[in-house]
Image 1 (tube, protein in one colour):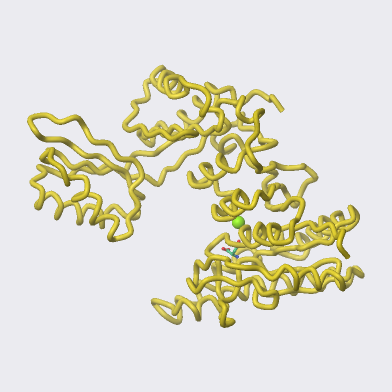
Image 2 (cartoon, rainbow, N blue to C red):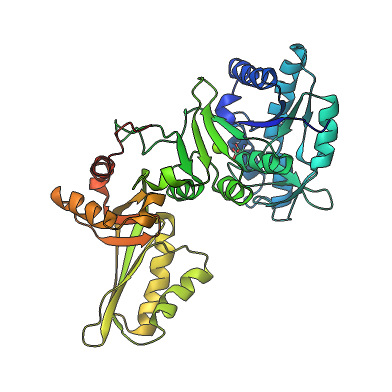
Length: 410
Ligand code: ASP
Ligand code: MG
């Protein structure tokens, strides 16, 4: 069958949590079939199951062997695909379940956060000659020599996008419990709006900022292989948000979304000698310990001395301070200061590429409300401001308003 139309649909943990939810999933799959598609249904583990399995591993071992742990945590998806296949079979659908190794989805050997290397799409197409629905376990694969791997938390989005890329699926539908991607967090800003479309690059910036709708690797994958991804709800008929390639209509919009991240801590080294090698002396030891530094600012030099300020994740603060005490001793910096009551807010939009003045508008809007900007960083499609955490929600609302995101421009 050469003209086989294939649709990949992925359902997250809350969509397969119980029998009632799975019946909704079944409806979505039947809709796909009714539209003439062969359906690849990728499932996550039922909500909470992966966490339970991980705590079980921790009961047995303080540092569970990663390969052994993957054999355990991958069983969450085995449960959901088996249960769901039973429902489809009872409904008379020609369906079967498939674990990662049965396809196979081949990965590298980085247990616990493996990367997909190849998918045997020929084998899958051959299966589709005999079945109308293949119910595939997300989040898992196997190494060349057949050992089970998992792709990192939230990894079944990546399984789905990779399958869609391998099979040339028209779109990859990621079903979840929200009806799409919003211009900002609706819990903070009541005028947040569901977007119809968002560019891959914008989505990447939004998920790295903690807008956790899609696994970040799945977006990278989708961008690389140009797979259109539709984020939609299992519990409504809303068409959701299409994550796709940027085009001129997206570029006409200056800012598409406001993201934020509370997980920030700020560290300052005072009075470092302003000589070559200082930045390396500060950031070298941090990167050796795998600590990710986010924003960095170096002041202008005064009397041959300067200050360096940077931000990190709060969980890394204690370790960073210990390292900075050492760095201060070696370099002669006068003191190490820190502040955990900070947060960052970002305006994101591919339209910024062609327009100047976005940063100035953001600064002016915050200044008007008396919000002090502590640090600034910019990229081609993003402006990030570090502010006091107590002003975060206000700042999100002000920026959302300033850039007209509450207008329904469709
Ligand atoms: N079940 C896995 C997790 O909870 C994978 C996923 O849901 O995407 O991380
Ligand atoms: Mg998820």
